Length: 255
Image (cartoon, rainbow, N blue to C red; front, side, top):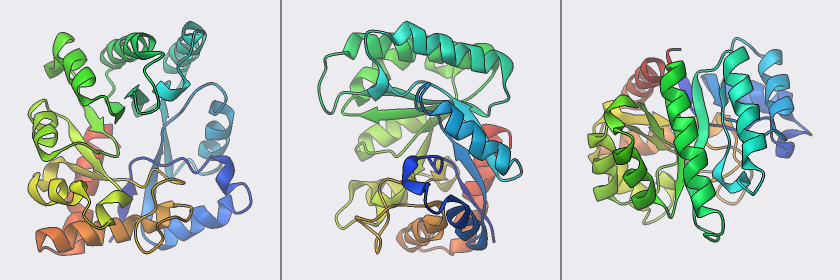
């Protein structure tokens, strides 16, 4: 039984002391494939270094994270564009809108997302969407862009069940992470109701560790805990969850 972690940041500084061991723990847990979304130009070198060390187990994305969007967004977009033109990537990500802290750069975030969505179509790639307190804004943009021409995942999905169905109806998959294990988590309702062929497993490591590691650093080796929770919610085996979510990931990201 093997798993795919479709969204993790094992290149993050949080793993500097034991990165090799964290990767080995993931492999030992059956997590044989891990996808690395980018943040901005300051994270690219670290991401590429990890990818080059384990090319048989990692795949890269190229993208500009919404919380990094400031006045100089054109410089960062040029960086993403160059990578897409010269590298090998499985998705444009992570991209999206995040209005949780403030709305200072809302219009810039919208333009950055719009531009990267267009590039995803140009390069024939799916997108990994980060959406926080901005579901209506992103859904509106997708509608304006003719969403049927896009494919991707709403990573670390945190919306309501109604928003989950809306995302699925638009053709997107939902990334289910450690939050699904939290007590009274809305994501549990989503993970139980949405068809299994629309779900992906992810950790978002080093963030959002599943129970019983909540509050600690997250890592890809915890993917089986997330899969087991989904299996319990749906009344099926963890093997069924592993097999279907891995099939979903291979199909979406052309792995």
